Length: 284
Length: 261
Image (tube, rainbow over all chains, first blue to last red; front, side, top):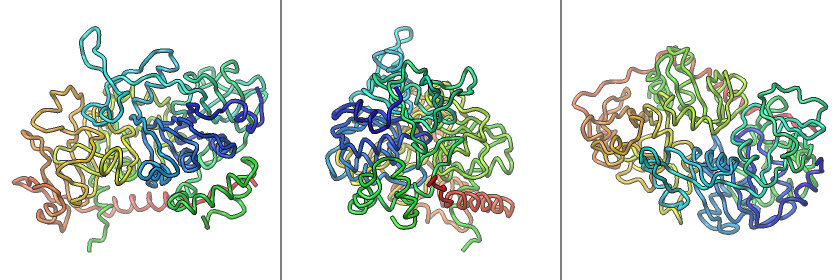
């Protein structure tokens, strides 16, 4: 169960799969996403409520064929330029969009986790989203006849999460903003987790968010594995990095040079962090 | 030139509309600044709920993202994201939801998805996020948007979240539980829906702004109320608190995280 990240990705992530890297602003599995880029996975159907910088990198690196998402911006900063370039100009390849709203994705994960065929919500009212996403449909309530919007259940081949810690049996603890992490985990066929540390005792309240060891496929200990997002109690979100990314990602050449140097040109996440520390963030 | 910026005036105008004890669904950017200004002035018991699941956050610096650690560590509780939308929004427990957009039409319908055709957009925007359900379920929404002919358009390119649809009561007939966009705050003044047609109507102006300026900044023939109220300028107290908040926030966001190597 405990594997180096390189082996976890090599052993469980295949070309063409549907992959969900979740974590709502917090606990985004950057180290795992960048390892997928290093290993050159392609034709992936990426699923994530907020693609964030990690999917901007994976899309720009050519890993993705399709994207299921509900909000594709750089939070508080503006555009995800690689995502935009793919949608607006097919670069580096066309990206098929399965666009939802947050509430729709939340029930789609919940339905997947519950082994139901679809999730339902009083949602998408009066919007154009159903016109561009044929997966957004409706059913009549069998009791009142009310039309209720539906979205198909999400069943990722692999869900990848980052968490604060695991114990030696492989129980995983998440705390702080958990997003739809638990639902994405329970909806998946395989669950890979990166953690800040492995401890003897999780020291968690009984109602804490814990993914028990028998649903976890593999765990990799990757300190700072959510950087430049954050892990509450370990390190803060690097908002300066998110601001700097706007310049890095805006231009294809600068983006490629940055990826070559810091992701493709490094062996692992520790190497990535060292390469960033060397330049500081002033010169993209 | 006024001794405050239009952004500051917008923020102050939005803050004043929030009442003590109000349960407010906050977005990042200006709405978050307005809500926290209100909390630090006239509405200390304002409840801030952020989409990331932080209930009753009391941040001392504004978040850059909707899920900054500051929001979680100052919250009364942090809940899973599906609960935010089902137990809080869909169940009707939000008094006011803030919305922004790239485009708005005369009935307060909003576009935050694409400029141009959806399949081959000129500009791909981030998308709807939580907006469609905030727009549907919050008891009312406040829209905050700078007023230009490019953003106030006769016809939005994509409807990401519904306002009054085609007006004249269509929204209520559609079964939408909330009352929709009851206020639109721009950088020039305030618009509200007319009671009958539900068409957005200019009802208040910021200092130094004329109705003609607002008409010119609108892509349709804007309705102007018979009586226009002036919006009182920011008080020194409001400005001081808001500027302190922004200064603390800027310093916090510019501080790079010390890497572990």
